[in-house]
Image 1 (cartoon, one colour):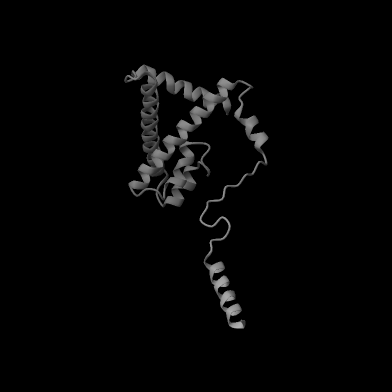
Image 2: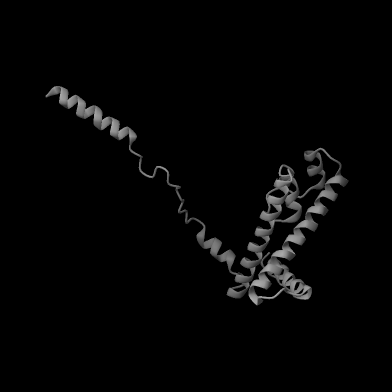
Length: 164
């Protein structure tokens, strides 16, 4: 009888050790509602739902373009310089847009840093124009004109400026 009890105990302990714990292998999602009201207030621009929608569209488009630019630069092996250069492209990026600090951190001249930022801005603009053109093409089903892309980019800039 005692031997059976010991075997049962060892078996239960072994099963317990192999059993997954509550939530094992599952990604936990935080449901932090603190500040939700403030975030909702920030999303509404002067109480106009259309303006809030335009801002969210513009912000999502800019974020998508930045992600594409990051991926391109990382693929080229330039991912380590991006934290120093992205603040020059997007004011919402973390960091300070200071050419002197960026040049010192990257170990290059300030002129070289300015040239790097200029090239990144040009590539960022090209990516943005392509994304806007794709959006217009998906709406109309036809290739948009340059004037239509330019007009949409003006709307994007207006939406960002109106919110900020």
